[in-house]
Length: 109
Image (cartoon, rainbow, N blue to C red; front, top):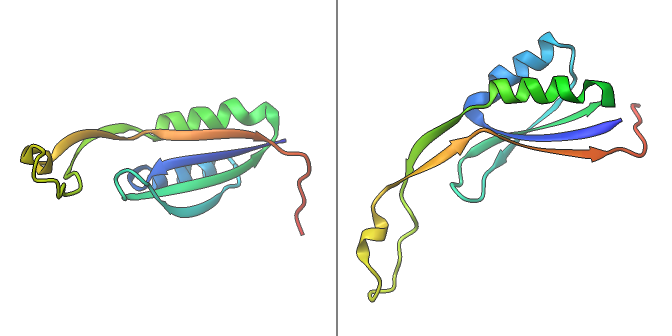
């Protein structure tokens, strides 16, 4: 038994959730916030048998896409630094970050 912790962008979460339902994969869905862009993410916690890990990873890979997005960096109050740093910059967002963790015990009550 393994625990998969998958962090995906909110834009991809509904599609992934539907894929889990269609493939009889139980997942707990949590609303989370990313630290860098302070934007909404969804974290799925999935308890799964080791034989199905590749299947779950494949579903996550197919549903979670990277995309380009503009963001405005935090305002810099240091007058000696270049003021152009407050202009929006393009960054890559999306995709998925997945942790696969061994589970010593699993209980349902």
